[in-house]
Amino acid sequence: MGGERKRSSKPLVLVASPFQGHMTPMLQLGSVLHSNGFSITFAHTKLNSPDPSNHPEFLFLPLSDNFSAIDASANYTKFLEALNNNCKTQLQDHLSRKIKDEMNHTITVIHDNIMYFAEEVASNLNLPSIVLRSCSASYMPAFLSLSYLHAKGQLPVRDSMMEELVPDLHPLRYKDLPFHSTPTEVATEMLALAERIRTPSAIIWNTMDFLENSALTQLQEHYKIPIFSIGPLNQMARCPSTSFLEEDTGCISWLDKQAPRSVIYVSLGSLATMDETELAETAWGLAKSQQPFLWVVRPGSVSGSEWIEFLPEGFMEEVRGTGVVLKWAPQKQVLAHSAVGGFWSHCGWNSTLESITEGVPMICQPVMGDQCVNSRYLSYVWGVGLELEILERKVVESAIRRLLVDVEGEEMRRRANSMKEKAKCCMCKGGSSFNSLQELVELITLSD
Ligand code: UDX
Image 1 (spheres, protein in one colour):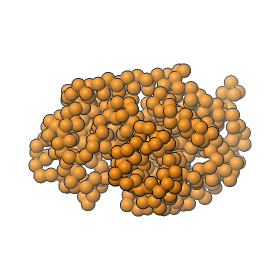
Image 2: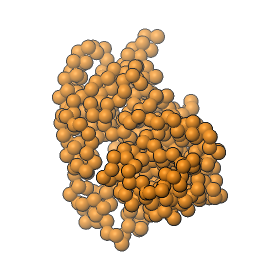
Image 3: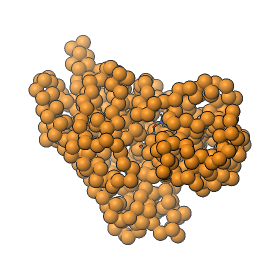
Image 4: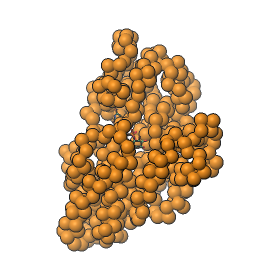
């Protein structure tokens, strides 16, 4: 009993980043850890702050970051540097006060990998820190290879090399590498950024052993600290909405009227942008496929426009009744709906996990970062995705029909359903993610 009571109030301070794809798994992790008896302080930037009313169980700590928006065209590493600098003193002050209040407990800091200032603060105060990684584990060996490729003068990768396999990174091709076309100076900055995290006591990965066993083993050898694969967090946590944008829930009643597994759901996540031509090719590809569609066009995601002003003339009339265009969807609900037969995605890691844990096969159109690696695994290794080689209406039409109508798509759906079942097993008592979570709880508890 006494031990239980002690564990129940053990304090964790979670430090989240202002990106949607990072915020969501951090909130989910907070919920999972709270239900395992920890008290949660959720530190976040004022930019893109979570809605506290969705998490009455957390104490929220807003940090002034001095940003009013994320400028996608700005230098990413400079943005991160300023963000980290601006938040550091506030967290340090808060933790110094909290240490005095928590006489009986050691506070553990769990931070997003891009919020590296949290590790420096924890280290200054002699507190243990743990990193949460919200990308796939398979991305990391590719990322870590950058310094080697850089030293060999292979970055940016020459066009003639793109289709070739990268030695020692099977099954990745050069074109699947993150930053394959990035100028050398930027790649160097990105690598320097990764070096900012030096002394975490553990790493948490939102993944499952059966899915990424080989990458997890490599990472274990590389980092030499405990790695906890605790996923899929989207299924492990019962979180209300974690969206920054308002979810258009009206689409669910539209889905209710569609035939089972007939709808293609389209979303390129929270950051990707497209130009007017890409918008038109997407639009006509959807129309020509003659399948019902639910298409998320995020406001501001089409260069030079507010929302869908650049949709081709006649498109809305042509698809009236068969398609819906919306600003932001309740994605997890959409993917869980029986009418959805496929997901055309940028392959962000959250979207990937949300799709495969609902047994929904994918059309893969990666845009940046880990998405190319995820796309390669989805299509080539796990057999649940089709690579969209080029964004042209005929190719789009054919990909949608292959996924929703052809036997090929049926086979992918069967494999996706088998992954869904395996994911459930991971979370059950004795499953890999269940066990990993228990080990993490133990590690944190022992730090007292
Ligand atoms: C970014 C990176 O691009 C990605 O590769 C990395 O793994 C995490 O951060 P992002 O573009 O945010 O990803 O995509 P993703 O990881 O898929 O996260 C998007 C989240 O927004 C998902 O949880 C998804 O459910 C949600 N979403 C998206 C909605 O709720 N509604 C939408 O309409 C679109």
